[in-house]
Image 1 (cartoon, rainbow, N blue to C red):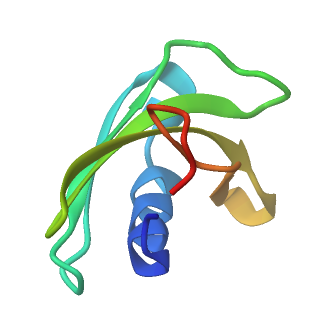
Image 2 (image 1 turned 90 degrees about the vertical axis):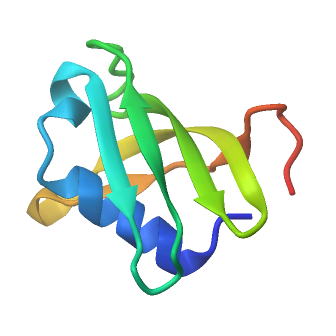
Amino acid sequence: NISPIDLAAMREAISGSLSVLTGGTVFWSNSESGSDGIIEFAVDDAVDNCRPFSATVSDLRGIRRYRSEACPQSGGSWDFAEITPEDGVLL
């Protein structure tokens, strides 16, 4: 699973990024945990205002890939739908 502090760092990274809306890559890092990665949004693939993405998490366990959707919240922030490992098996 992705740690809650890494999820918070990922949310913060996309909150000010136009890549969520236009497609592209957002880099994220968490100095507290030492984790980092990328979040890749598809170009204009919105479903009910949510934006599908794939993400990597690089930490002490290695590099893992996930899929989810970022959904807009009030106040301009974004939250994630259920995040699943790319192989489809929940950890």
